Length: 212
Image (cartoon, rainbow, N blue to C red; front, side):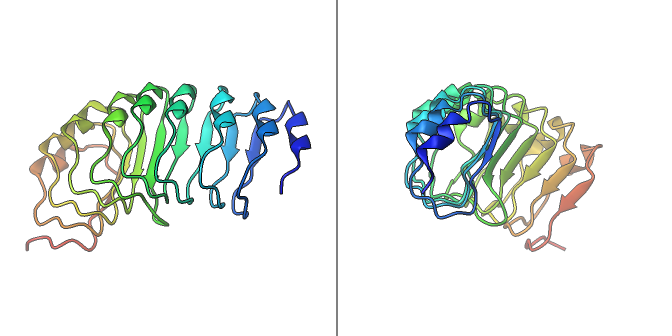
């Protein structure tokens, strides 16, 4: 159990509580309004405490590896966020309010350790025009949305271990893409536009039924 007195550390900028067995977090932590980094991944929380929504200086928030089935709308109030990791949960969609996270540069819907049961990348991501990284490993994705080509700052796209069968032809509009991980999907063919990704440094196509 965490003591309420932790809330007295009002100059704290980074708090890492990951890989514990925490089931609840004291409300007093809502007083840590100078926090820029909060990591509570891999604990035993069932809901996110509302006081996190008052930490409006947060730049990095890691809430991965719980059993969350929904996320609260107030997460959209954290408009300074640059990194959000929600992988390893049971999310089938994201709240529309996350469209307000327009400063986000890194979004992790799934990592190699676990993803979320998402059929597609949720529409709220479309408004995150500054995104440079989308991690969507193990997310049960079946299709990539047409609007993905609007995220022109993307440098890293991780799509390992999904159910994707085809890549969109607009990939060449992601001119800054340098890492593309497509292993363990169901690709049979690849679009010719793949050859237009001049800055691509890493391409992983392992474990796909590609035609000879």
